[in-house]
Each structure stands twice: as structure tokens, then as C-alpha cells.
Amino acid sequence: MTTNNEIYDCIIIGAGPAGLSAGLYASRGNLKTLIIEKGIVGGQLQNTKEIENYPGMDHMTGPEISDAMESQTTRFGCDIIKNSPVTKVELNSQPKKIFCDDKIFLAKTIILAAGSEHRKLGAPGEDEFSGKGVSYCAVCDGAFFKDRELVVVGGGSSAVEEGNFLTTYAKKVTLIHRRDELRAERILQERFKKNPKTEIIWDTVVEKINGGILGVDSVTIKNLKTGETKDLACEGVFIYVGLDPNTQYLDGSVKLDGSGKVISSERMETNMPGVFVAGDIRNTPLKQAVTAASDGSLAATMAIAYVEALHDSPVAA
Ligand code: NAP
Image 1 (cartoon, rainbow, N blue to C red):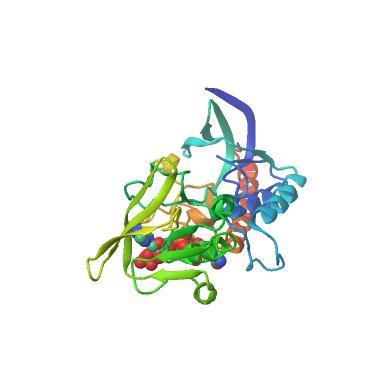
Image 2 (tube, protein in one colour):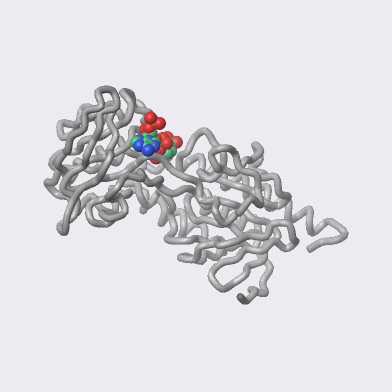
């Protein structure tokens, strides 16, 4: 491990809308700022074909909004390191330490903005056919399923919105939901139900994903009310059963709630001084690109105030 000699004013973990917005505000506020991203820039924006509820950005795709945010953020001098998962943090010291690949980065403040990951269903066949018919990203993989029959699992906004998008390519999209009511936004539900290429199977779970050398060929489904089990033919299974926050590397160093999300104050403070949080990784009731961006701006504003107070203190960093 080598330690990077530069002490950043602010290091942001994650380059989704929360992290990019935090990077924009922090660097524009004169903080020497670095964003460390485990994959590519954009977070969940990269998985979303159409974002129709980010004010002022009508008819733009998720990846287009992500590109615009990235170039605006770097224009103010924010550095971004991509494809570098953070493996550990030390938040008690000043400067704070972030461990990443074979390097240690130092920062006066940290903003946790690592977002969340699609949850796995946990059904037999899910791992075996991942990339061979099982997918978590309609935008990335939908085009491989032209005129095919697809299954979408889940009843939230992601399942319904992405299921609707998949009908652009697919012959038919069957949504399988474990209850008799969707939790997706009403406008998305209505759009899905009106689409002639869709069907919903209620009160049902996917017990197994079946296939062979050519990939997925069916799912075994079970009706939870009647107990009836049957196979449903399909060539693709898109799984949208919720999101889990990316907090593994924190290893107990900040307080999490019962569902593993970072507990924050209204000002995006965690329980650790100088460590702020933004976006889907925190205990927020609304998970949208616009609320993530809003969180990022506030977290960065608090980080700027923290760095200014550090410089004013007699034992400045
Ligand atoms: P979500 O809202 O947590 O929904 C997950 C769905 O998966 C629920 O319907 C849940 O069923 C079902 N589920 C969970 N575990 C399951 C299992 N083991 N087997 C079968 N079904 C299971 O997740 P999401 O749809 O990914 O959305 C995440 C957040 O992003 C939400 O806050 C959502 O509002 C937001 N979002 C917004 C938009 C938009 O505004 N356009 C688009 C996408 C996402 P139950 O309903 O029975 O719990």
C-alpha cells in the first residue's frame, strides 16, 4: 500500500447523481475534491432509459444526464477516479483515510455517496444464468431480447418502469409479483397495465430459473395463495426486487439503520464529525436522481463549512 501524499479537502465515495452533485458544489466552493467510483460514473442513472421527473431535463436518458453531470463537475476542477472500489475507511483520524486498490487517500472531510446495488432474488438458476438470460439492467440487455418473451420480477417502480421499456424489444413482458398490489408509482402502473404487450401474474413468486446451454428457457413459478406450481416459458428474466445500500467497506465505522442505510441528520451529517452522506445510501424516504443531487449539494455545503472551521481552529489540519 502506498499513501497518496496530497491531502484532499473532500473525498466523495461514489459518482452517481449524489456524488457528482457533491463534487460540483465542493469543487465550485474551492475545496480540493476527489470522487472515487468503483465502476463507471452515473450510478443508477446508467440503468435507466428515460428520466422523466428530473426538472428541466425532459426527454434525456439516464446516461445522457450522467454525462452532463460529469462534465459540469470536472469543469470546476473535481478529480474523478473510476473503476476503483473502496475497501476500507478510517474515519477517526484527521486526515481521514480511504483505502482503495493499493493506495491510501487522505481527506479532511468525506462524503459517502456510494448508492445502492440491485438485490438478488436468491432463486436457483439466478447465478448460473446471469448474463445468459438473467439480467438486472433492461437498458444494458433489453436489445438482446427482440421479439422474445420476458419475465420481470418485482412490483416496485424499477420493475414496472423497466418492464414497460422492455416492450420496446420484447414480444411480451410478464411481470411476476408476490402480492396482489404493486408498490410502483401510480403513473408507471397505469402505463404498464395499458401496454398491450404486458401481463401481470399476482401473488406469485419465481422459485427457479431453468435453462440449458442456450440460456434461460423458463421459470418455475408458485402461486402463494393456491400453492399451484408451474413452468412459464421465457427467454429472459429481469430482476428488480429492490436495492441494497453499498456500505460494506464502512465496517461499522458510521451508524446504520435496521435496513443497513447510513443514518443522517437533516444536514447530511453522520455520527462521525466531518463525514457526510448523500443519496440512496442514506435513510431517505425518496430515492430519485433529483433528491440524490439535492442531498449532494447540501452534504458538500456542510463539508465546506467543516473545512473552513478546521482551518480556523488552533490545531488546524
Ligand atoms: P422497491 O421499491 O424496494 O421494490 C422492490 C419490489 O420487489 C417490491 O415490489 C417487493 O415486493 C419486491 N420484492 C422484494 N423482495 C422480493 C423477493 N425476494 N421476491 C419477490 N419480490 C420481491 O425497489 P425498486 O423498484 O428498485 O425502487 C427503489 C427505489 O427507487 C424506490 O424508492 C423507488 O421509488 C425508486 N425508483 C423511482 C423511479 C421513478 O421515480 N421513476 C424508478 C425506479 C425506482 P413488495 O412490494 O411485496 O415488498
